[in-house]
Length: 217
Image (cartoon, rainbow, N blue to C red):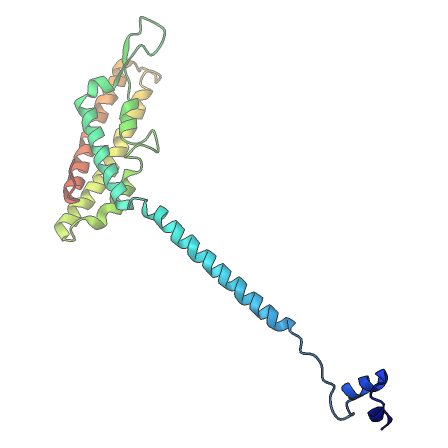
């Protein structure tokens, strides 16, 4: 009652403006704003992450589109490998002969099987016929789906694998022709010529594959 009369007293003003809650009534507290702010921050960060990921996908698409299809690359390898083998056979003596390999002027020119192994794809991973059997298998799905074409293509794959291995083997034996007991330059030349028959068969199987795939050599 005295506070109501003496409102000018600071203590009374405080008591009148801030009533003391009763025991049965819970005290009024300020609402904590922090949890709501955390929700806003999480939503913002999630939106930023989605936007960044989306931008990265659309940025990567042009780079991915520049890569040629795998089947196109395989087709080019088969055609290029066929052309190289055809060139080798057309220039057999020249490609399997090397001159002035050493400083000895009396040695002259020698037959060498190195080019045979190279043209068959056994010397470098960059050669178009490197693991060409796997290349041919990947391309088989592009062959017309009739039994005759599929069987002919499968025979070409089998023959290629067999003759390529034989040709490389003969060339390898030829490379040791002089080192083996009883060997000599004639043995080197003998196995080089034997490998030529295998190279012819390999070239022919590639021609069959190219025809069935509808390619131009």
